Length: 143
Image (cartoon, rainbow, N blue to C red; front, side, top):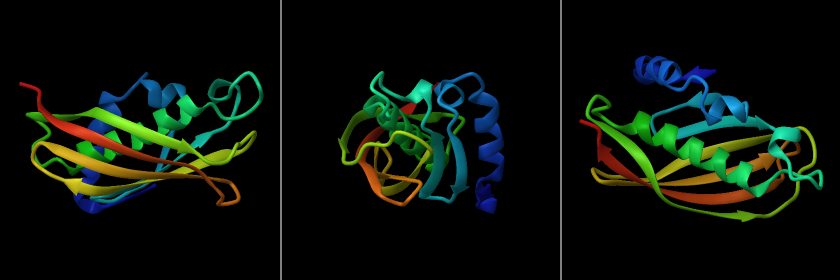
């Protein structure tokens, strides 16, 4: 995994905080983490599929919100006193996927003091667009 140097400590803390979460259940792996861009991969298998043999839209949305939330948390300057929480997410499911992996890229469109807006695009193994999503995060105090 490629991690921007200035984020390495935050990423290690995130890994400790994130054990046994939805990220683990969905087997999401992060491939690249920069200040305002995060990339990951999620397998398309029985735990992420509908009973009809295709990727569940909810799994795509969970993948998208995970990318936005992790990217948003890593973009915070003060992680001891603030976190991010999803305010709104929407998704357009464009193409079905029945096997392999999906790859997501989350890109910050706005990183403010009280809100963040992230654009997430999910592609299949052949780089076909599967889902587009936009996620708005609230920056919230945790103390």
